Image 1: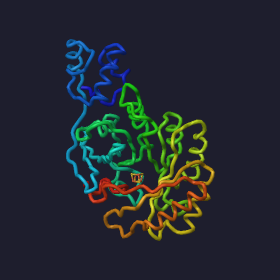
Image 2: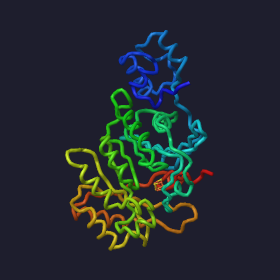
Image 3: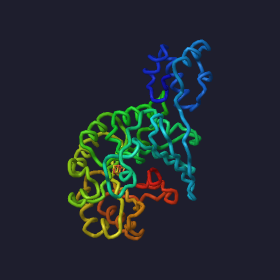
Amino acid sequence: MKSLCGLTASEISELAECDERHALAIANWLYKRKSDDLMLVKGLSRKAKEKLMETSCPGIYDPVSSLRSADGTVKFLFSNEDGKEFETVLMSNPKRTTVCVSSQSGCRMGCPFCATGHYGFRGDLSVRDILNQVLGPGIDGKVTHVVFMGMGEPMDNLDNVLKACDIMTAEWGMAISPRNITVSTVGITPGVRKFLDSCECNLALSLFSPFPEERLKSVPAEGKYPAREILEVMKSARTGKKRRMSVAYIMIRDMNDTRGHLEGLKELLRDTGIRVNLLPYHSVPGDGNVSSPMETMNHFKHELVISGISASIRKSAGADIFAACGLLASGLK
Ligand code: SF4
């Protein structure tokens, strides 16, 4: 039985052997109403619905478990049809509902300060798996923002990530603005180029250090795809686009929060139009490092802003349930 979740409207039309109008009705029902009862699709005859049910199912599945943080953040554990596990984080406030999705089960990038890196690579997630994290049970109401900052390196599963973004942003799909979708990467140059050419969503580069030799120790991808090269690609893709390009800078005390790092960041990002998101560090289990104090983070922000570089500090969410940045997969075997 073929899952409808993960298919574009034209693929649904082909599968269901129906015209475009009916395919759009099915896609709308699936991606906007999040219903898993095919008999409820509006604008389709009973006969057509029964025919559709002979060959297809909605393909939305439940999380295996969930954990709620004291700050309201919820972490879901999913297991796909291949038994690969992955986590999703839901953050809500009165203004927005953000889902932090995974693109892979585990990750093969091996960044030492990330629990997912320690977990290792278990497999790519399908388009269905990625979309299910936004549609899935437990996520009530309209999702306004999606960030690909969960488990995995999106550029390492790019075709599925791009198709998922396509369905999330399509009018017949989830109709989420591409300005509200951010894909985070450690930087794989060919993937970044293809991503920027293929969609309008935002891109965030995980930097860690402005200095190549130091970055290499924390982000092994630096060896093959230097951050400076990725930033050049990001800069050249900006023209005429409204999307947001940013750098995520996780701050570790006495490691990457010195005066020299601040000057290095300014030198790297001045006049690029790329903004900086400063993030507190969350220690992976067994690691003795701690986050830079808020005072240091505020100082970085202030100095960057007065140098003409947009900067903000991202609030930590869900640290008590290992849902914060860099902690996903902490509890998985
Ligand atoms: S930081 Fe991102 S790319 Fe690096 S190991 Fe973790 S999930 Fe993978």
